[in-house]
Image 1 (spheres, rainbow, N blue to C red):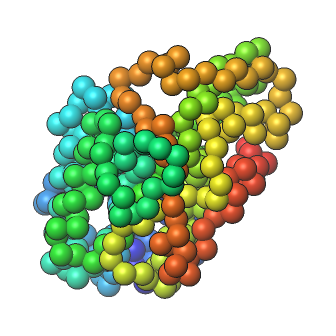
Image 2 (cartoon, rainbow, N blue to C red; image 1 turned 30 degrees about the horizontal axis):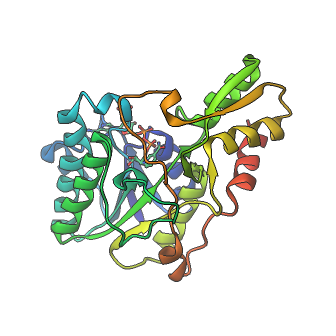
Length: 279
Ligand SMILES: NC(=O)c1ccc[n+]([C@@H]2O[C@H](COP(=O)([O-])OP(=O)(O)OC[C@H]3O[C@@H](n4cnc5c(N)ncnc54)[C@H](OP(=O)(O)O)[C@@H]3O)[C@@H](O)[C@H]2O)c1
């Protein structure tokens, strides 16, 4: 099996490359080699023999910056995926792409299914949603995996930032009204391995570990697991005004993926404990 990973230097791209090398020949590139917003650049993949799958880990992920940078965010999160989808359709390749819980408005407390109404609150969410729609309209074979609250060893993330804060400060205030599931990039990469070995139908799928937490819960779990002394104070989202509004309810229902026999990562706190034990 020959797989191309685009955006391979990002947080998810690095772990995906590591895991998929176990089962396939991996052509791992980032923007210096292939710019997903440039059709000619994508055609570099013509030289990759027996290519079967493109995994797009490239994205514009700076959520707050996107509020004042609509054009580059749209180009990378919508135009790029559309060009990749068109390329995959022409070459009959399988496209795996990632989207986000930020396509939802975050109302209520019930976990979102793939068929629930979308309604992004931010430019980032809007451009990621447009990327989904353009891929769906392309006619290629695709899996769009909606992820949330990613952390991993190869990019800035809440877990590493909070660990640093809890280690260096006496008191840390943490948001207690946004709910979701922190997701380890290694767990996503392992699910990707399963999807390559045993493909599932084209469509959008939700992927997150089991159970739900607020960011405050996650901070308390880090404090407990690492035996840190800092006091953690729960606050509401308006305590930290930010350019981009976040959904309060980011709970994702993963039963569709499970219905195809895909094993969902275990409880978020045990997955987090495993990550922390290696840091
Ligand atoms: N991080 C999260 O919490 C989160 C949550 C939900 C969903 N997701 C989704 O999960 C996926 C992976 O996220 P991530 O956190 O691993 O992202 P990331 O760390 O920001 O990595 C994205 C990579 O794409 C590269 N890139 C940017 N523009 C490109 C272009 N035009 N062509 C090729 N490569 C380009 C980036 O390079 P530069 O660094 O040089 O720009 C970076 O190496 C994304 O689709 C994201 O939307 C992430």
